[in-house]
Structure formats: C-alpha cells, structure tokens
Length: 69
Image 1 (tube, rainbow, N blue to C red):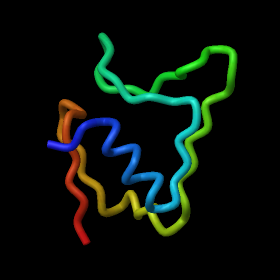
Image 2 (image 1 turned 90 degrees about the vertical axis):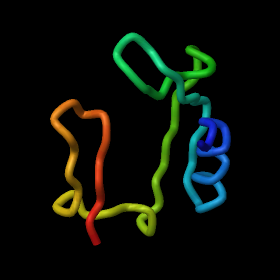
Image 3 (image 1 turned 60 degrees about the vertical axis):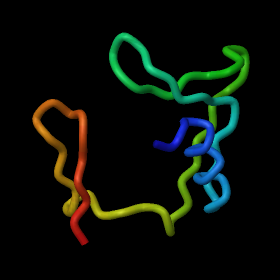
Image 4 (image 1 turned 45 degrees about the vertical axis):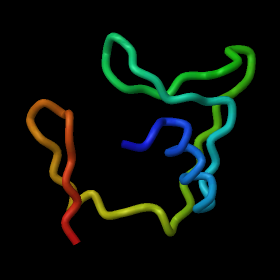
C-alpha cells in the first residue's frame, strides 16, 4: 500500500500542486488538512489528471470508487 506521503510525491511528480497540506484520517474519514493554519492550502490538479465523473461509480458507503474507461 502507498503511504500518504508517497501519494503526494507521485501527484506532484505528475504536475499536481499540494502546498501547505497533508492527508490524514479524522473522525469523518480521510481528509486534506492545512500544515500551517495561518497560510492558505493550495491543491492544484492539472487538466491531464482530470477524468469524467460520468465514468465514476462510488459505493453506497462512500468508501470506494471504480473508474470505468
């Protein structure tokens, strides 16, 4: 399994931006949180990493998703 830090590294290596943010679990599930509350969080997804939501199926518990090509 890939760690959250590895996931952020891979996202950035593909052109994504993930500044002043971390991924962690909370009482509501997985989330993105600021590292420094006094600064803005910036998450940028380049167009080549976007996908059509018409091809996305999320289970009823909102825990997993499947993308169909």
